[in-house]
Length: 410
Image (cartoon, rainbow, N blue to C red):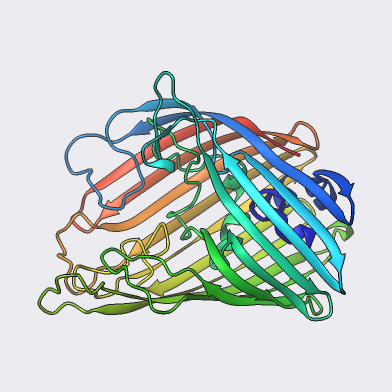
């Protein structure tokens, strides 16, 4: 159960930096019947960004920057983190409680820690309290989770993204917030951290599954919810990384929810009062010797792009289809890992959208990265990223980023 509580921090570290046992070590101590663990990370990067400017660069929902070039000292795709976990065995149950606090190194503005930052004198960063949950269960029948934690849909996509330890597409580099974008919106929809009640099965010969109810999310003007969001997922893993033989993982997830216009809304002619947004994603990760590859894809209708249920429908509630994915290959030699990846997220027009609008058609990027394990806890990172956004009107914008920095896990 302890491994499940590290999630975005330790699971990613285990995949890309250090052996699982080291990544999950943390700082442990006993307090009565409880075993307590403190873990986290600190990271910082210098990021230089070159942006398109001038006419025909506006893209609604585009992630490539426009306007002035910029330089910043900032967090990467991961914010810093301090995660407190307690585990105990009571009445034949494994019980766990986790609270995760995620501060940034950049100052926050009125939009909060997940919005644009405020690089000005006498400012201060904020704390993103992403995790607050408890679990109970047993190896014989599974685990129940209650609280706020990472979702199922697209979770593996971000955990297996090599830019998780770096920067990827910078996003708001002139006024950096807590995190960059990585491949969020450029290969996968952000999994997000949501209130949930979730059940996970025991692992049977490498297979496990999870399913539960989640807090439904607003979708534009559709802010009324009379039923929860549903997410289910399953995965199968095989092989021992120490053996030198082929190891791998395959997974499949589904997310679905209904959103309705509130009773106070003015309904336009021909406008739907509700719509359902559903998407499915899946992927495969294979590794042998120093090589590792990831192939991921998603497809849905009424789920939008970049974040769940963002730009999910037109003004009349007709759902927009969306799809995307990424392909990634890495090779590790001793302490150095080289990686390259390509990803794209596409959005389709709905019936009330104008074909000549500046609505996003696609966000795509190519990333090259070098990740050097300075020690078992510290990794130095260098990345180059080329990102492009296109609109249905023919507008487009290109962004070029380079990032140098490092990350420490404990």
